[in-house]
Amino acid sequence: MIFDFRVYVLIGVFMTVCISLIIFNFVVIRYGRKQSAPSTGIIENWKGILNKQTAKASDRKHNESKHEKFLIKKLSGPENLIAYSHALQHLKNKFPNNYKTYIKKRRVAFQKLADTYNRKSSIERTCFADFICNFPQIAGGMYGQLAGTLISYMDDSTVHCRTTVLRALCNIGSAKGVVNALQVINEKSLFIHNLLLTNALSNFKGDKEILMESLWNGAPHWNDNIMVSIIHFITKFSNNYSEMFLPILQDSSINSEVRIAVIRYYRKHMYAPARPILTKIAANFAEADLAAEAAFALRKNEMPAPVKLVDENNLQEVLQDDSDYAKEMLAYMLGLKGTYQNIDLLKEMDGEKLSA
Image (cartoon, rainbow, N blue to C red; front, side, top):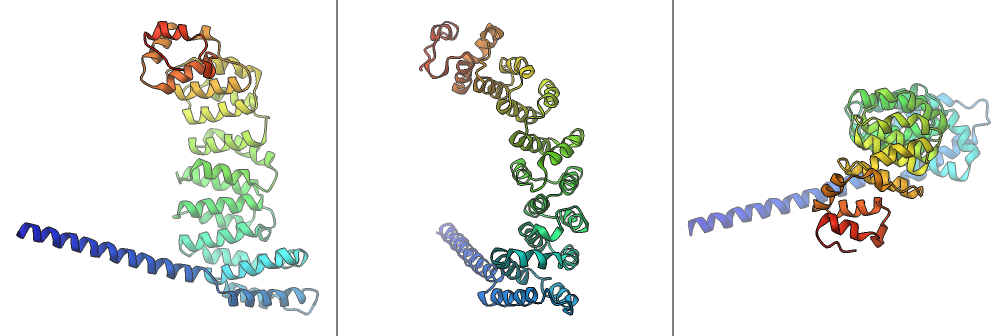
């Protein structure tokens, strides 16, 4: 009975702790939402301030430095910055010309604010980087002090902060800024998933060809994760790298994910000299992932891998494997597709029944 009583006590304590944590999390989330979502009144107040500033823009006697000091003081915290961004977005949507004029005069103020946020937490830095991401015109479409400050945000930061900084630099449209940011990520081994990197690069607002060239020039130094992202980015927007990618396709010592990215490039932009290399890769069952990608690239471009390059030993290895995927891939490579033509050949070598 003593043992049973103690068990019940432990269960009761455990349930109490769980309920307490649920309540605590609920309160924290509600409080966080309250803090991060500015009230309509605050947003309307900022709209009024912006309207007054744009109305005075043509007045030569208007003191711009007073508004600059006001912004630096008021926008040093995320709550006001978020409310201000709502009002600024309204100005951008309703009065685009006034927005452009207003933004040009605010660049010094926002550089000072960027420095202020650089001394704050990763969450607050993310907030300011997101603000620049939404209003990249503040940076003037070029690499300058503001872009340099944003890059420094990536030190001692979260993945979300680093990704937001990269998105902001891509929206600014500065190839130099993006390359410099990736160099920091590369040299300091900071992690950002290659899908996030590819997405950011794909939304680059400047000249994509210039960015691709700048990124490819740094190819020998990029880590595998960044390299995969760069190749995916190039695949989406250019067919000018067919010859340059061939050495990667041929080098078996290179990371398989990087080579798969190159194979997918040729799947979209087939290049005649790449065909025999892809055919050889497709016949190498020791690297099943690469073989499948190569077979698919050839099939998509109506160039099935020839059977003559697949010897009997390789076929036996695959057919003795328990993997249905491996067998389906083999059938696919042999040009059998879903119909499994020439099924007798597979039956003889496998010694068992294969279902279509």
